[in-house]
Amino acid sequence: MKRFLMTAVAAAMLSTGMAYGQVFVRIGPPPRVVERRPPPPGPHYVWIEGYQRWNGVRYVWVHGYWARPPRPHAAWVPGHWVHRHRGWFWVEGHWRYR
Image (cartoon, rainbow, N blue to C red; front, side, top):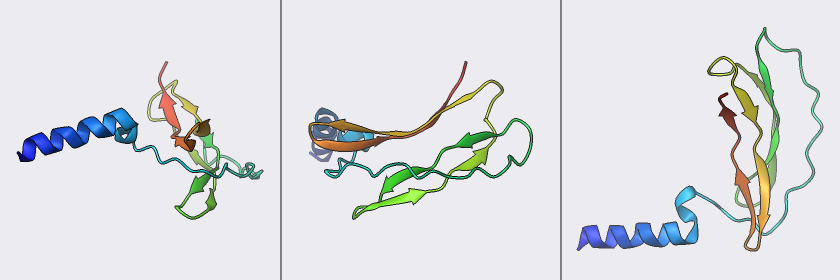
């Protein structure tokens, strides 16, 4: 019975899009904050842009930072907010490998 219940919950999450951790926000994000980039700490660093994060009550700004790619020739794909009929949801930034 316990296994059946867990399977039913997992199926419901997949059908609603909840399995991917999407949290829909009814209020659109404010404009990006223009940040002044400090100089990179060394060669091969990539700037990871700051973004507006929803904390459950309001948006808060997360500052950008310098990071080294995990592999040579990796490119950073910035995170972004997407609007759908249920509201806004955040798509995480990630490294793309060529």
